[in-house]
Amino acid sequence: MGSLASERKVVGWAARDATGHLSPYSYTLRSTGPEDVAVKVLYCGICHTDIHQAKNHLGASKYPMVPGHEVVGEVVEVGPEVTKYGVGDVVGVGVIVGCCRECSPCKANVEQYCNKKIWSYNDVYTDGRPTQGGFASTMIVDQKFLVKIPAGLAPEQAAPLLCAGVTVYSPLKAFGLTTPGLRGGILGLGGVGHMGVKVAKAMGHHVTVISSSSKKRAEAMDHLGADAYLVSSDAAAMAAAADSLDYIIDTVPVHHPLEPYLALLKLDGKHVLLGVIGEPLSFVSPMVMLGRKAITGSFIGSIDETAEVLQFCVDKGLTSQIEVVKMGYVNEALERLERNDVRYRFVVDVAGSNVEEAAADAPSN
Image: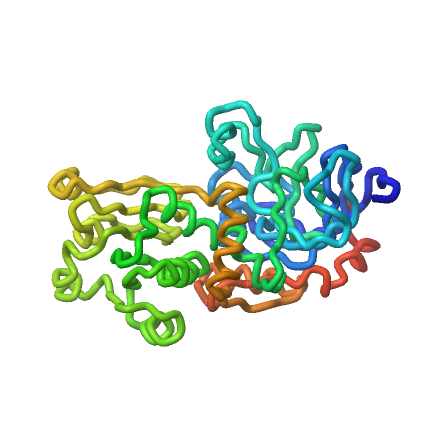
């Protein structure tokens, strides 16, 4: 273990205001506590939620803010009560870094539904300090909120699975939608959607990708292995597909109508919302009543489910399709993500970007 470091200065790339522009920022991490693990960040995926938070789309952003919640790193130090990890282990950090550990969700090991959960960034930790995410050289994380990256999974490939991967895996498991032969729809083909196709196909489902245009047809069917492709603006095709799906995984992170998609569901079909949308969605009640259909939601996944989906991907030979970039490109990457110009997930090579070299010029807290 070695001697525990005192508080340490690190450098991250932070947003300072609602423009969402990131630049180097020097700040101090807490010292490594008894159950804490110090993690040297290797890679960090970029999620659409990072845009929402950096640009204050949800109205609760606090600055300076270092985003990033799809973090893979190497353990460089452990507290004296850490039993799960050792120096040199490659681990993942997701969306949550704290919870109350006493409520029903916590006791059921679905801590992502704890009302007192602590976000990996844009939140306040138990010591009163702001949490900062993975667009940084180092993180300090309680061992409970880490997962070990299994052998056979490259660290840059693992990063998107910590959010995008588990976000689709969790509802399929929770709602009993893992049986081979089910017919599923994946609405939206971005970072979460492309993993939805891969995970559902690996479970033996017939998968239809639903998109607003035909431009992703070849990608969906030839590259990702979808069985069918449905353009939502094609009224005839949508009508022909009515009552055909057992579920729809809705990954769209912006306002959109629900009724056209509810019509695609069979009796007892489920429409699962995964996108973070800051305005109300609407539908007329007969759309669900007349087929006993359900509109529900799911939020990322538990630590246990995260470990499960990592191993599932190893066992099934699944990988995420990524574009690796350096930290200096992160603002362009965020802009491209906002206009859906990525196939399918950006991953920042944090360790290879020498972020510490920016310390001399970085504004400090």
